[in-house]
Amino acid sequence: MIYIMCLVLTMGLAGGALAAEIIIVPTGTGDDATLIQTTLNGLGNGDILRLNGNFVIGRTIYLPSNFTWILTGSLTLKNNAVLDRVGYVDPSKGIDARRYTGISEKSGGAANIDMSGGTYYGNCAHNSSSLRFLNFASVTNSYFHDMVITDVSDDNFTLGPGCNNNECRNLIGSFSASGNALTDKGDHNTWYDCIAADCGSDGWTPKCQYSIFIRCIASNNKGPGFGMYAREEGYAGDVGALIIGNQFIDCVSYGSKDSDGFSFNISSNCPGAVIRGNFTQAVCYDNQGSGVKFRNKDDAEQGVVEDNVVDVVCYGNRGLSSSGSQNSWAGGLGMENDNSALHNTIDNIAGSVVCYDNRIDVNTKGGQNCIITAYHPEGENAPILADNSSYNNTVTVIDFNCSDSLYQWCEQEYCGLTPCAGLADFNCDGNVNMADLSYMASVWLTDDPTADISLPTDGVVNLLDLSILSLEWFQ
Image (cartoon, rainbow, N blue to C red; front, top):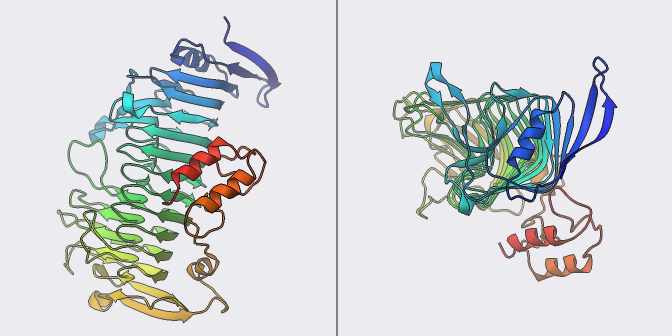
């Protein structure tokens, strides 16, 4: 049987070259890896590969440059898949960050990939415990969009240190057993409307430089929603990472079970790490630790945390450690060093916050020369401040009312904030419950835009939407 069909030939713009549109369907043999890789190897520049159906692969797939991949259906790792170890390698620096990988780029790097559609299942229960599904080491100028990556033993989707100038849009990473959903270790990448949810470690790992995250969400992860743990991967020993110049714009992080909404973390094993010049504009709530936290605990006393800016709304963060004990450094906005004014300092954190109903709202205990304006909304409890006078920090509280002229994003966001419990909390009463289920039932199999909450949306209220409602039920 022939599984490859050339459907359309279109005239390319460069040199009159012909671009093919090719469709493949599953072989039915239980392993489609050979079909997919053979087809990829035969593509020309500008070709479009459409994968229609539910595919299974038992070995690593390698993507070339200059093509479009559209999955309509799913792609699942078969039981005990025999995968290659793939990742960023630089022998001159002693770096070997390879992991067992489902999909990556061809050796030497790739560019100009347009990859979209479908659901990628990692089949976590029947594969290696240290597996990355979509794991790119050196991809540039590419576009990844409208995909779901789920049920992976380690990391779902990774842009490695050699990845730059890529765009990721409408990606959902979920249910990583022990790893992270969405990872950026490269530079100058842009992420729009992506979600990291229900992972066994961090939701996001933006261990990158000069990347931008717009309207991105972290929900109900075990570790930090956005975890900037500043330790490099793949070295024989401990090496600190550089997390510099990133922007988080209109993001949300909630429900971390053991940690913070945003965690900028130089831990004891991150010698020489630098966290500098990052901008965080976000809403953070219902996290075990802080809403946003800056930490500098480098044992080598070389860590640098400086010149970061916040514009955040933080409420209902519990200020507790993972074990449930009170954390004296935590806050809606919190800072932690090793209690020294001479090293491992956290310098020049600046910005605006609306913080209320956190155990501590603004905690500058570990900071120096920090200037924070805490906007206090009328009707909320006055902010609880901790250690705001030590090491030349300044925290100024300004009362405001939502009828005032508002100039700060955090004020505007607070006044427009709807306390919805999730995508399926249609009446925004703070719970996903029978009222929401009744609403979904009333518009079942219609194109109702409110209840069509699957991502990406498919234009009909169906079992995909019901599955999201069931996940959020009474959370």
